[in-house]
Length: 330
Figure (cartoon, rainbow, N blue to C red):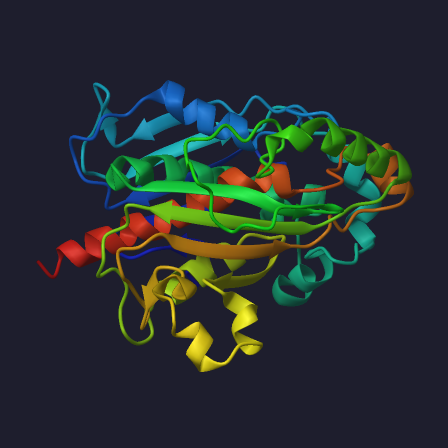
């Protein structure tokens, strides 16, 4: 029954429901002596928080983290780190009608089939709000990554598409919506506002670039680096597919073409990082709540802009765990 934990040497266990008192995470394996900035942690949570851009949900949540343990005088102690975020903008009565009704595309019915009871308020444990705990984990993971850069960006959102899967500069400001071409922000804003008015939703794709990752991370059998990334990313609620390198295009190309360029393998060969830029791709489904409920409620017509920091966090969690596991060999 460890479905709430992830990682081995760097592990996180998330807890809480979307309409409970708080959500949080317990992190174990974070080395001692790392500098912790509460301000930087708050900035990461703000990137995920709702109500940051026009065309997204109108819901506002402050998401102020409280560090309960594992940090003293601004540095990690090497002991378990516990962080909570209290829920402050709940409208639980909005979900009363869902007590005996199940929403297609949500975990309402399957949750009931599994446990025989559920918290119907906002999806409870299966709510997207759980991802704030992952972002907290990603912040602490970044303290281990040091010079490794992780950048996620949207390459497809409705009619908007960015053809390249690699950014020339990972320090680029992606603007309001985290689309790879920030000049499209105003068009994306109009598009999302219109979707919201129509009670419609849209999905898309997020690509991740990882620079500076050393060679040798990952195991040759079950714990391949690609498998670790796949599990981490597919565990995000709205994520429905994962690939790396050329991905699905490999089904269309002969081996002579695929094997002609090492970059085609996206920085992972034989399940182990090869020291080159790692390129991952994920697909996210449209928000399941549509129609009149979406028009009247506080739902995102597209989850992708807010999913980007969650994707980055889960990738960082994987790399931090792999770095510490690799050190165990040395």
